[in-house]
Length: 491
Ligand SMILES: [Zn+2]
Image 1 (cartoon, rainbow, N blue to C red):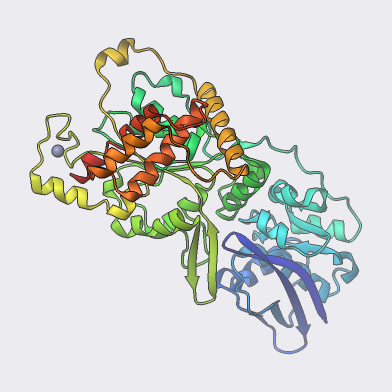
Image 2: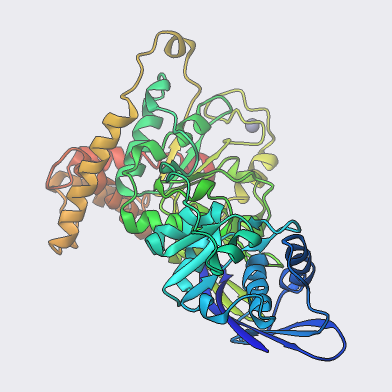
């Protein structure tokens, strides 16, 4: 007696179709799973057995062989519990094989027969090759993001058996959840008093997608500013929203299967491991913080405290927008396209020579600076020095523009930049004064060729923010100021 049930498995953030073949034969009772299962798939036997028994169905005292095809694809996670159980019931004639035609099954089984959430439902739903798809009730909204009404949710194995036997209707899903922000509510920029340079740097970073490093003592508002950056970015376009939702779904962090429509904000701790930053892991491959920040902001507070290996691992996503994790079973690619914002103290004691009360030795300062490698520092278009706002600013300072207003200026600047790109305007047009100012900096050695590209890029964004066709002298001056923090980090 043989049954064949369609399903899917997750590899990174990508799903692969899987065919679950169940063979039940005479002989010594036994249970074997073949076809490159990982440990959690091999444990399916115990969950499936308990779930079948507690659903009032019988477990075969026969020889059971499960083959997961294609055998070249590694099968991970507990999502294959449900197709294995359904296949067993068909192979034992508890269910008519015809009622599973045109359906794929994905879901983890609890010992009491309940169906449980599996991560990566969006990718699994995408990979399923049949017209219909049966998933745990709690995952039906996530599956419906790509499958619409073809996704069916059930709460328990017993309920599924009743539906497949024609004794009950598919249960109605709960109301569709509202879209979520990947990181909860975003605080508003108008809460920040004083800090004009910091607020301006955020606006420029958002408008031109420029990576930003803030250098300043504790209490200079670096974290407060960084947290407000997602509120300045435009909402995600539908394709971006699906990409982001798919990554968070694969990580198992998606609340209630809702579409993420706002740019995510991720702030990993400086003690984070390389795996938690860029993804991987020994069991099923999980996306890391850099992937979870895709189309949003990755904020590294205390940049100087991160392990050198962790920072080096971020170079690939910064250069290519993806992370490749190599495995014996092949390479998995995670999307990782984020706006990098980092913050650091100017020196180990935090005060910095420019603020005045630094207590560090020259050697300690030099060691601290060496933690940020030159290639990493070069990734930041904006290196902005920050100071603690004076008490007067905190008490009486006027609040800055609200996030909504800044976001509007950012959106307009981005529209202008996109229009220039689609018109094929590659060269950045400089006014005569702007060009001679840059020439002077190049001649004096204050600016390298690489630095020149960065400065003109930022100056172009500044011109877009003020809606001018050519980059002006003042745009260049401001762009130079917006990288003045490099002096603190490199000297
Ligand atoms: Zn110091």
